[in-house]
Image (cartoon, rainbow, N blue to C red; front, side, top):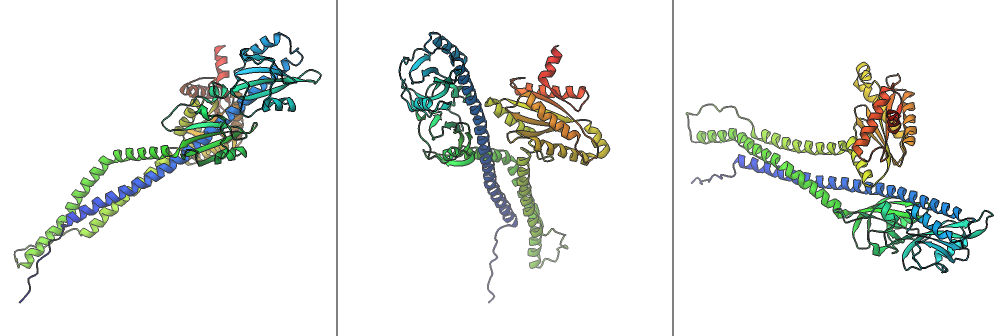
Length: 533
């Protein structure tokens, strides 16, 4: 007896292909999402910690300038009182005058060579005739030189930093010192210059420590004078180092910190952002990417399912033909040509894989292009706008040099765009060699370049521009002929308090240089004075 074999129906080929396609899309999406999240998080991590170091460095420079101005102010005051009788009644009025013209201190005082307070401004402190006993005062009396103290509790029960300068008469005799007090837990010059930090969505903040690791500026006033020398970042600041690193604070929160010392006084500034905020931002970016990609993925799935059905049709015809043939159907016509299903399925998978590979590659290229000009390797315009916006927020004064190659169109027309690109690279290399570590060089568009110089006057920027112009004029270019530059200089906030206006002014100065014959530098402020005349 011949056993009966029950045919196993199994799954339809269209179902198998559809399942494979759907799983391929899902797996690719999961992998792409995880890779994208990791890449975005890494990019945000690096950008955040780099921006924090830039912020710390800028704040360090600001604080250094502030300290220099404090010392200069006290030096002028001390020189004024050098030969004046310190018991004279005019001392108080003159001290009030200096207090009114100096925005740096909460109070001013004069002590004689024995440490007895002669006069104070404001005259409401009730200290005249008192003898100073603090370590800061004793140090000022003993060393007889300009000093900045550590934070301490003064006779007024305030937490202060004392900035002092000795008073010598014209014969070189020591007469005492003039001291300026900064009230750390009340409105002071640091809050005016560095800003009052309020709560923000990122949780970022910065703080200042002195040479011994004590907090002298912090958004939480109750922590001022707290010793934080165990913090790894503070240890490096106390050693005079600057840099960036991940650090865990006393509350167990992980931060991305940038830090820079104020070398003249041994202070240090830390700017930091919580790591959790970076991770949350990366997740938000990926969620937005998924929401944007969802319609395209749905269309892709529908097309894939339709294609799987189309691929299965020839094999369905083949299966029907074989079934009829097994039953001895002599009326069957010759089998029509069919597409081999396994080849088409492999092609479909390869196409989907290739599509996602190109998507990731394009995403990576766009990430690089978002920050860098591919031809010259300089910063691009988008990053330039981000930097200037940050500087405006931090009230960082800066100058801008806008430059444009003269008759560059003729270079492309005569020598070709390839040689024109080489000329652009030549200028880019000159800019890189002339920039300071704090400067930024950007390709603004076409043959137009821009240079940002923080804490630089228009005259200093003019000198830099002239060096660049001279070097380009005398450079051996790839086209073996001289190529010149026209440059325009403008300064923020001296020329304009709005960035758009400041860029327009630099552009006007550039085109004035073109109008005057090219191969020259024009400062906008000088140009404005000429036009006014």
